[in-house]
Amino acid sequence: MAQHHEPPWKSGALLVLAVLAVAGIPGLVVPAAASAGDRLPEFQRCVSACETGADSRGGCAGVLARQGEAERLLWWTCGDECRYACMHTVTAARVREEEAAADARLFGREPRPRPVLQFYGKWPFARFLGMQEPASVLFSVLNGLAHYTGYRRLGRLAARARATGGGGGWPTVWWYRANAVVAMNAWVWSVVFHSRDVWWTERMDYFSAIASILVNLHVAVVRLTTARGDDDGNDERASKGKKTDGGGRGSAGENEYAGDDEDTGSGDAPPAWSTRARVRTASLTALGLFYLWHIGYLSLRQPFDYAYNMAAGVGAGVVSYVLWLWWCVRVRGGDGERRRRHPRTDGLLARRRSPSTSSSSGLRWRRRHAWKMALTVFLIMTAMTLELLDFAPLYGVLDAHALWHLATWPILHVLYSFFHDDAAFDQARRDLGRQRRRS
Image (cartoon, rainbow, N blue to C red; front, side, top):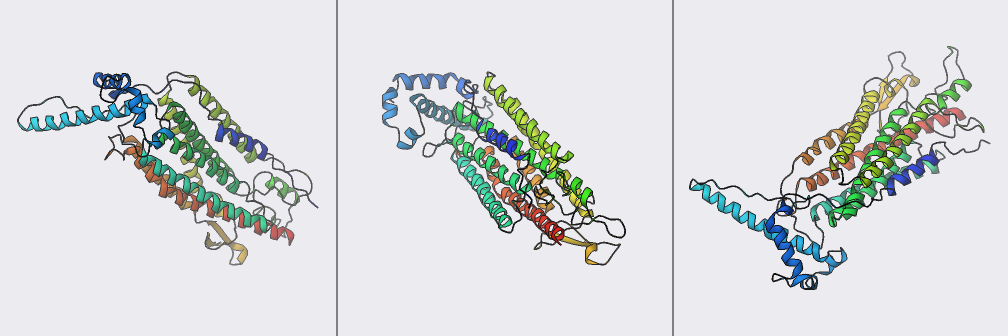
């Protein structure tokens, strides 16, 4: 009886995933650099008067005495309260002056406009229950729940595969679920950061976000290198032990449907590594090391390099999207999957009759669901344009960043629909491969 061998990639993958999920522990760095608003003399005078008791607030004792339970729970200090109050005081004064300037322009005078400014890198949001950016908090929760729903759906698919003796859908469904776990961690920290913007919540948000982007990049590599289903040594084993028909052609059950299953019934020998498996391992190692260097550099550098952090995230994201689109072209455009025969699985697959034969073995199958990933990439790239916009929050709550979080929420449902269909496709193909090997 063939023994189950642990796939050579899994122990290293678990270690790197653990690092990606929790190793974003920020270094001891200084807070964000100042913005135009907090450099205003009137703002600095207001904060000083608030903290020293030179105004009607009664100093820190009076400020903290009037503090609500939500603000205490979210660690609003005296200085934080004074900065928040003065930010809105100064902003309201500037808005009144801008309105007066608009009236003056009607009479031919052109006074200098005084727009709403950012303070400590943030627009003047109106907090709710102690949360600094309530809209972004709400939309981050929705995104996290979308990932959780997708994770559960993929889990049910993997459970059904195990129940039928089909394994867990390795490696696609495993990595799709791992991607969901790291993404959920990122959105949890997004909720924390938008609830309370302090230096360490900012670092955790940034480091968790780049971890999610890098894992998605590796998932694209995994998908691209398992597109044809005969990798990770299965093609090598099949070519050595395959049966041949009268025309000398290898059995489709031994090669075309071998898939990425670690238990191919090839005896007790552990699975050999193919070139594609080495590519996946190299990708995982390189991205893990880059992530460790990334958080080390940003933690030790003072001041925090916001430009580099943004460039690294955008760059990794763009590369992953390019790889996904490349895969979509391969499986839909005549290279790779379209040239192979595949099982039919409840509407997931489209049938094409081979011109060379009219028998059932001449039917060729391809992934109908690839369009969902192409649509996801297009929608994400379109939604990213919201990040290029930067305007003062509408009604003190809704800014461009909050709208970006809102835009990604429905897109995730399309993404996980693709993940589910793709993993189901691979599982059905492996199931048929097993049936053919047994027969």
